[in-house]
Structures are given as structure tokens and as C-alpha cells.
Image (tube, rainbow, N blue to C red):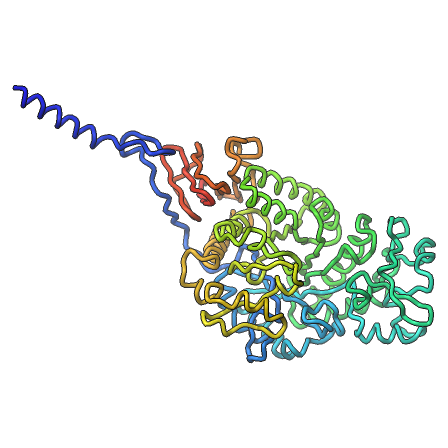
Length: 558
């Protein structure tokens, strides 16, 4: 009898073991039906249409070398259209293509031709045509603030006070007195440092010229009083040059250093000037058969509140604050403020221009590279990509960022402007424009397109996956960012969580990023049954989301 009782108890114990699994920290215990299930994203198939307005910043001199002379060129870019397609790119911003004094091209010596190091005019036209066949627009970097001091305009202007080009630049025999007397409209007398001796350089015979950048090698252009800027000779000349490139099929311009054109950055002068430039370009655009409005974007390297007024002049501006807040969030493992900050900036921009275009970005050619700022940590680099491509705005990708390239400006700007390494043997890179130290740092198999394309968890494949997602779902491509009611700036218990919705008519997506070093368990009232993207690891069970450290997930909730 005793043996029978013991056997019966043993059977009952076995049954209990079958029905209950030992508790797992951070996960619910109980029956099988309540156990967390791994998130397996099932995104809709991308139809190939590029609706996400993703642009790619190309350094023409270092992107791809077609002829083996060490310099990137137009033909090299043309040969890589499939690469841009794989990133879902619909526009290329080309670094300055004009003849210039330096490798980077920002000291232009002729606005009306192409730098022969980069190719011929015909090869440029072929680039434009091929890009258009791939549904990719071409934007030229256009420098309106200054020229190089070897530009024929300036050489003529400097040589004679009676030169017809004298009005193109800012000359004075007594800059301090002339600024104080309001005789130099480009430089505001009320500015505390209206006269800065370090910005004035000898032109000979007691004359001086103004140059804000590069110790006199980039003399500033003179557009006169802003109210009549469009009638100035310099304005007419740069507009004529812009019109020439529009006639060749260029789709828009990126305008360099626009807060420095008139030297009172907080006044309405620069926005007024930029509106005049934009309106003239738009007229030329439409006269050449362009549909809609031409695309013109400005660089105002400042925080959001100083950028916002420039929407009075241009439809698109770079949002440097987006990257400033994102790098802080990632390095401090604090996500809860991010959505609130970005939404507040968008509100500022909308108050100035209802149809504003917020060009979001990580780093660019003037900043330490994103991977460098993030400690060369691939987990953070990949999550930065996922956040950029799941937030509001029109994102820009900077050459090499999609491969995790690192570098800081401490040794010079070229340290953040390295070439793309195309093959695993690291032989196909445009080396001529940059120092050997920069090249050596990146000429490894791990940083090549060939190697990363074979690794589903590489930085490159992360960019490709999330770019394709953005092009697939209208809510990501063109939707608005909305605050989450639970996981937001007020929820200190979930400090590492950055969470928001992306919404458009008929579609709503839930975006969740865990920026913390530890996994997080989130109670969610949202529908978690339709995951469409995952970075890292995540599980769901009974209204709960278990999100691993430095992991991101997107659900379709409507």
C-alpha cells in the first residue's frame, strides 16, 4: 500500500513539473501559454519605390575612383548606383564639383565648370542622367558666402579699384570706421564684434578685403543691402551659375555656411537673402520644366532655436540638434527625453514654416564621425542608424557612416572624410585627396562594402534593412512623430527607453528603443502581434515587451 501511495505522489509531481517551468528573471512564470515568445519581424515586401526621402552625402573626391588615379570621380559615383539603391537613397548631395584651390572644393575658382580631377562635363551629365534613371536626384553643394582667392573675379577685383568685379567683394580702406558708419551693409555695425581685425587682409595700396574663413584665402562675397541684394552684381552672377546647373538637370542645392553670408546671424538678413535666392532658383527651375518646387537646403550649424528663423528663407534645413540630442542619449544611456526634444523642435520649425523639411542626420564632413563619438561601439552605431531611420524628418546618410567609419577632426578635417573601401582586399579606394594615415586606418577588410554585405548583423546591413523598412511603410516615410503616453520624458522608471509612434493616414507604427545596458520589461497596451523590425533581441507575452539592452523594435499597431 505504501509503495502504491509513493508511486502516485511521484506521478503527480511529474505532472506538476510538466505544467510549470522554473521562474526566469524578468519573465512571467506560469503555463506555457504565458511564456514570452521571441519577436520575429515580418515586414511587408518593399515594392522598390523610394518614398522615404533618404539622401546620401557624397564626397566626390573620395567616394569611388573609376580610373585608378587615386581620386574619386563622377564615373565612380555613376558606377555605384546599385549601392545607393540598396540603401533606398533617392537623392545625392555632392560635395563641391567646381574647380577649386583645395581638395574639398569649398574655395571655388569657377562656378561655371567642373573640376577636371573629378571628370569631364560629359561624365557629370552622364552621372545626372544615370541617377535619374534610378530615381535618384542630384543636389550640388553651392558656396554663396565666399570664393577662393584665386577665382578670376577676385584676382581682377584685387588688381584694380576700377575693376568691374570690385563690387563682388568687400573692400575698405578703414574697415572699423566704415562698419561703424554703416557703409558695409554685409557686416552689421550693431554686432558687438562688427569689426574683427582677424577677418581683414591686405589688398595692397592701403586697401583691405574681408574673409571670414581660412586666413584670407576665401574672400567673402558682397551682396550689398539685403533689401536690394538681388540687384547686386555678385547675386546676379551666382544666380546665373545656379541656372546653368539647373539647365543641366541638377535637382537642387545644398547651401554652405548660410548664417555667415550677412554677419548678423540673429537678424532677418540671411533668411531674407536666402528667400531671394530660392525664389530666383524656383523661377529658373520652372522655366526649365521642373515640376513642383526646386529643392534647396541650408546649413545653419547651430541649435534648433537659431535654425528655426531660417525657415523664413528656405524650405529645408539641417537639424543639427537631432544629432546632438541623439549622441547625448546614446552615450548617457538615457532615452526618455529624446522624442520630447525632437517634437519640441519640430513645433518650433512648424511655427515658422508649415511645410518645413527637417533634414535629420548623424555626423557630416565638418564633425567628428558618429562612430567616433559613440566610442566605436558597433551596438551604439547600429542603434543610432535604427533611430535615425525610424524617427520623423528627412534623413541624410554621410559617406562611410553606413559602414561604421570613425575619425575625429583633431588631426585635420581629412580624418573624417575618408574614402569608401569597396573590396575586402582594400584595393579599391580613392586615396589621392587624403593623407595616408586616414587611408591606412580604414583600409581593412572589416570596413569594406564586400565584407559587410555578407554579414547580416553588420552596420551596413543594419542601414540597408531599416532604410528598406522606411521606404516600405508610409508612416515611417512621410508620417508624423507622436509622443507615447507611458514611455516618455516623465517616466523615470524607464530612463533608457525612447518610444514614440509614427503616424500617417491609415497607418500607425509603435517604435521602441532601449538605450540602456540592461534589458527592460515594459507593460504595453499596444498591439504587439505585428512586429516589422528588430535590432538586437525582444520577446512579447500578455501585454508585455521584453527588450534587450541596446535593442530596438517596431510594431504595426494600425
